[in-house]
Amino acid sequence: MLAVFSEPHYSRARVMNVKLGALTSIMDDIYDNYSTLEESRLLTDDIQRWEARAFDQLPDYMKDYYLKLINNFEEIKDELAPEKYRMLYLMEQIKTLARFYFEESKW
Image (cartoon, rainbow, N blue to C red; front, side, top):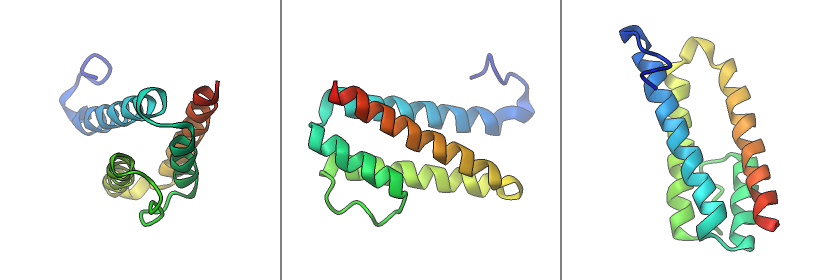
């Protein structure tokens, strides 16, 4: 991220991008390596609902990831308080990514 946002006043952007990169990488690993098809479907459904309390049926390792995902997005939303409308686009892209990862896991 330092190569993309090298100037000091972009430190907030670097932190957000690293968090998002780590979260999407972990999501990819969950879908590809660790979850069964049914668990992947449950995670995809919960990400589509995007509610912090909507994870009762997930396995423990997915609950932890799901809560981290929601909490990190809340932190980013708080940091971008004046421009909150941008978060809707990012959340929709994460939902789309989850659907694509689920489709890939069905293959």
